[in-house]
Image 1 (cartoon, rainbow over the protein chains, first blue to last red):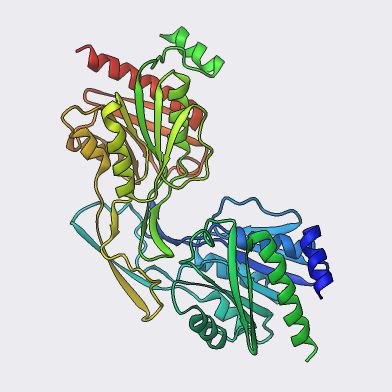
Image 2: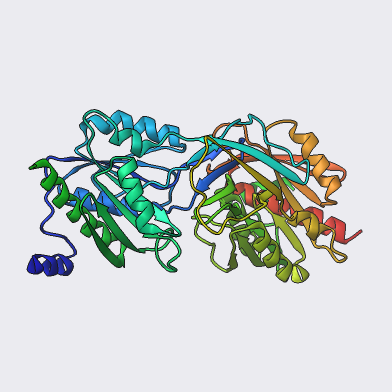
Length: 235
Length: 235
């Protein structure tokens, strides 16, 4: 209610979110897909949102496992961190922990494609043009959501256009419980910023959160996830 | 001489290196070449070696300008830092400061290629394969060394094979004063490590430095650069 919400804002904690005894698996940061020993393809992602989600979940009493790509953010206290580089490594780490997870929150900006051929030696500059072929990476979120005993799966969507359309389509196609979408064209928000704004979608509803500092946004999103999760579990 | 060298090792400073009144321009870190608003191609580079070179040069009394790609290393005290993302931005920043520079040290792992077409909107996953065409980036080191009144130009070479061959070839082709090469296949050194080993080449000689912490290696390399620079200036 409003009082709780105001209290939450004032104390810096959302009093309503209690995840004691729950296990939350979170992915964060980018993945890096090597082309050769020095070059890689990656996505912009500071990991800040995922790390803020992990901190908020730990504060709410959850057991938190954070599978993180290469970032320079410090891991929050009380969180198990597994470090990975590639999408395949992230998938392996997620699959190792997903059975114990009640909620899965995929904030990581996983590279959609990896090099078709990984060169063992540094590719030398030759011609004026270089053509590389990429193949699809595993879709971690889709694989998790498709598991027989899947956890409550929350996806993120960073979009530059048609945000609501792509977010809803992701929700349906991957059979997710929720999708939190952000518009990457809004300056000063997202990526390396400490601020973000999210438009969250679920089966029969949506809610806008922020713009707000990522730490506050993480608490608000976690509270919304908790609400939807309990709603779904009680059905 | 030996006494100076030992003293240098003991005090943690190389007493012989005095760059008072000299301006040293250093590039560090990777560059990132965008494919679309979320994806980019880049090189492994923590920036640690370049930042250590900048710190050592500032300690030796030089005016230091550091042009840095995206890294999470803290800039050393007393150094002017210009932050860039792409190779083109790095070239622009370097050209802005090169006229005042006596010595140019290019530690940056500049991406050799950039996307031929920069997509304004996020490339959507479609087919199983994605083919991208890349075109050559400007060669910053080569352009600097080819300037009419070029500074004493020092390049770095990260190689996975035929190290001496590629380093000497880089020295000649780009008309550099020195090349510091490292073998990226040696585990525990280079990239994100705090340690490295270098094999340094110049017109009529070479010297191996390390394995050593990058901060110490930076002082030793700077001392060698200073020695070769003074030797060349007095000819």
